[in-house]
Every structure is written in structure tokens, then in C-alpha cells.
Image 1 (cartoon, rainbow over the protein chains, first blue to last red):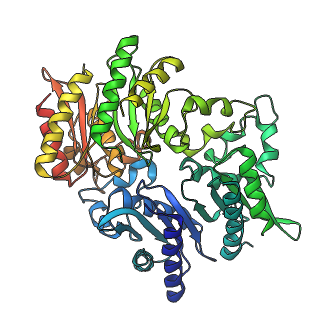
Image 2: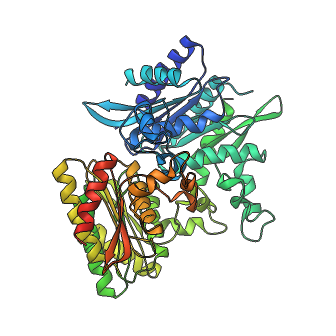
Image 3: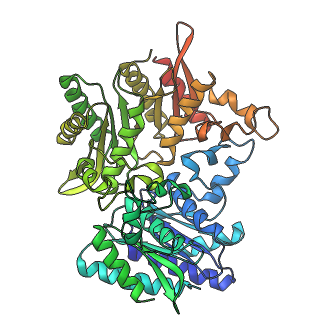
Amino acid sequence: MITLNDAKRVITAAEKKAQEIGQPMNIAVADAGGNLVAHVRMDEAWIGSIDISIKKAYTSRAFDVATKDLAPHCQSGGQFFGIHASNDGRIMIFAGGIPLKRNGKIVGAIGVSGGSGEQDHAVAEAGAAAF
Amino acid sequence: MITLNDAKRVITAAEKKAQEIGQPMNIAVADAGGNLVAHVRMDEAWIGSIDISIKKAYTSRAFDVATKDLAPHCQSGGQFFGIHASNDGRIMIFAGGIPLKRNGKIVGAIGVSGGSGEQDHAVAEAGAAAF
Amino acid sequence: MITLNDAKRVITAAEKKAQEIGQPMNIAVADAGGNLVAHVRMDEAWIGSIDISIKKAYTSRAFDVATKDLAPHCQSGGQFFGIHASNDGRIMIFAGGIPLKRNGKIVGAIGVSGGSGEQDHAVAEAGAAAF
Amino acid sequence: MITLNDAKRVITAAEKKAQEIGQPMNIAVADAGGNLVAHVRMDEAWIGSIDISIKKAYTSRAFDVATKDLAPHCQSGGQFFGIHASNDGRIMIFAGGIPLKRNGKIVGAIGVSGGSGEQDHAVAEAGAAAF
């Protein structure tokens, strides 16, 4: 179970990291069912990234994987190429989504979007570390 | 302009009201562009209301009206009947969305979903009052 | 938690009821996150009801309610009229979806479609009783 | 014609294979019309694969081909590149879907998702062999 307090703690840690690297972000947390628990868009963060952050969280839980690690398999020629067309467009196949684990079990995910793939992943990691 | 801090203050006030009436809610804040600034799902709130809260905020800003006041015109026989099929399904025509005003000008909206229409509207009002 | 074995037991009981009343049905079971666990289409059941059964299960869990009891509020003039346009079209506002409870807590839902509203609800009840 | 009993037999065989290789799967069977007959999500299988398994079954019947064999033509530069955008997003262009034949005629398909492309195809083959 992920409570709203859990999600807020994760998001606060991610926001702090985003401020440190100077890149405003959209940050979302999903629960075990892939459903949104909370989302924030930091001031000046891209509006196109609202949807992406929410979908990265979904994707990360949907396949129990960091979206960064899913990405290589989803390029043209890869074993999962075309997966982005599934799940009614909810699958994001680039860095920024990370599963949230409790006692070794995945119970949700964080999704971050607003900068480069590397930045998004770093901010997601900071959030996940606070879980 | 609605900052993330504004949105958090609005949401905190709405959460407090939801706790008082004992009904967990989904609460969303949209900016002047109708785009999501922040969202929370309180523990035990309906997962079907995630989407509705976000769309009530959009609708309220999209037509600069409380969704409660839009509703009567949208029923079968009303002048806007069918409007819920527009905007790619983003229009919610029942109570719970309220515009957020600054110096008399609408700059965003709050959307609440998780209880009866009356409850949703009351929680949205408590949030809007904190803006 | 709903296991696949749970879902199969629920579906078997629902199939039995459908056979008794002589109306082939689509039967779906969703988990706590509203995600599909299992689905069957009985021989000769409507193909248009595949989607409906799955969405009734989702709806019933999404709002923790029997869709039969949601329906009256969703008609023109009701407090939730327009809710069928939310959740990307996944909300079914007629009889046939029933929450599945364990120890008083809702952990999923069954959705049935293939006959009259009364028949769908009766088959869903038979399935839920086996949970 | 594929009966529900046929579909259950196919699914049971596929489940057995998935257990043998230790990878929980989503397994779906579609009929000659490409419409779902039955689906199961094994415990711990990815929720993102529910949709994919159903769509692999659809795709396999839609083009009367194993999705594994469709894949090479659908990569960037291939003759069918872009096909995943057709059919309202129902086309899955990676391994795991196999046609079901009776007397040399394709009458449906099985779709499997939950592991690597190789695993998905192997489980689908085990299911198809039981038809």
C-alpha cells in the first residue's frame, strides 16, 4: 500500500532534487494498481510533461521495471518494439519511471518528466530513495 | 498565475474539509491554460474519481464556471446537452469544479471528486477559499 | 488480493447461474486496482458485451458500488449525469457490476453483460457469492 | 468455431507452460472475428500485459500470422512500418500471438504477454498445441 503521505514524501524529495539540478519537473506517484496517487508540476515545468510523468509512473508499475531499462527493448528492432501503442497510449518508453518497493515487493512507481532522460531518471531516483 | 505553492495551499484546505466531512476525495488544481498543476488522492478515495477531479478542474476553467452551474444546461433538453462529448471527453458536467480568481480574474480552477455532488462542491469551495 | 483462482471460482459460479437462466454471458473479474484478472465469453454471448463486462467490473471497483445502484444518479437530471464520459469511456452506468469484498473490504469487482440488466445483475450476484 | 471450452483448454495448457518456465503470463484467446473469448492474468503477471495479450490475439487473427513473423516487416524501414498505429491501437507487432487452426483453417488466435518475446511465443505455442 502507498498512502498519500508516502506519495507526498516521495514527491518532496524529488522536488528537492529537481531544484538542486535547476530543472523544473512534473512528478507523479502511482499505486500498485498503476492508478495515480499524487502529481505536482513545479513552476515553469513543461505542460507537455504532465501526461508523460503520470504515464511513466503507470508504465513502471505496469511492467515492474525502470522505464530507462525498458527503453532499449522498445526501439526499432527490439523485442518489444511497438509496445508504446498498447495500453491505450499509456506506455512511455523512455527514462524517468522507477518502481517503488517495500520489503522487496513493488507496490507502486514514480514518474518524472521535464528535462533530459538522465535528469528525469535522477529526480525519480531521489524520489524513490525517500520511499 | 497559479504557482505550485498556491495549488498546494488550495489542496491542503480542501483535504482538511474532506476530513471534516469524513469523505476521502480526489482534488486537482488547474492553471489558466486548464492544465494540471497538482493532484492528490486521499487514502480510500475512489480510483474512478482521479480522472474526474482533473477533468472538473479543466472544465471549470474551460468555461469559466462552476461545474455545478454548468450542469443544468447540460441535461437532456438543455441548451448545452451533448457538451460532455466535446474536448475529447475532458468535460465533466456535474458539481465539484470551481474557478479560482485573483483580483476578480479567473486564473485557474479546482476540481473535486469522491462523494456526492454536494460534498464535492463543498470541498472545492473550501479549497477555493484558501486561494 | 484477488488471485486467479479466486477469479476462476467467481466466474464458474456466474457461468452456472447464466446457464440456469438460459442466457449466455460475458463475465469479467477485476482486482483492487480495477485491472482485469480474468474474462470469459460463454458460447453465443454477445460480442458487444465483452467490453461492457470488463468495464462494469472496472466501474464497480472504481466507485465501490454496484453499477445498478450507480445508475439512477447518472441519468439526465441526476447528480452524476455525464460520468459516463469520464475515465476514457471505461464507466458503465447500468446493472451488472458488483464489488467483491473480503473481510468487509472491497478488493475487486465482477462485471457481467449479455442479457437484461436484471439478468446481468443476478449472474453477477451469483459470482460474487462464490468469492 | 472456438468454444469457451476450447479457449479454456488452450489457456490451461499455456498456464502450465508458463509455470514450467517460471514466468507468470497474461493469456488471451480470440475467435475468428478477432473478438476475445477468454483471458487470464496469472498471479504476479504484469498488469501492462493484460491489454497486450488481448491485442496480440487480435493481431494474430487480424493478419492470420504469428506476431513474431509479422514483427520484422513492422520495424523502421520495413514494408509495414506504421501498422501499429492502425486498428485504433489494437495491433501488437512483437512475439506472443499465434493463429489457432482447425482442419488447416485459421479460426482464432492466442495472445500471450508477460515475459521476453521468446517466452511469450513459447507459452503461446504450448497453448496452440492444445487446440
